[in-house]
Length: 124
Image (cartoon, rainbow, N blue to C red):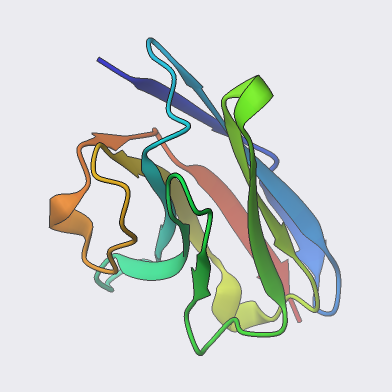
């Protein structure tokens, strides 16, 4: 079993920055793919960014490309989502997820473990 705990969410003005963290416990996840998803009220959960296991290739959604960066620190069993130039449309609950396979996936249902989510609110 893997437990994931997100942190770093909060309220920020448009144009501001936040860094989300996702700490994993229960097993080492260096070979597992990790993803960040978000869900706004009334909307489906959507892929934001992912980082593969082993090769650590990254992928960002078009909506955040150039603004958000995903990274990981395997020594800390932690993934990060650095977010710059935040906009009101980025307001959502952000979730961290891990899949035991090493390849990035953009669909939520293939991920095996999920965090509880952290709220990000961007004011205009």
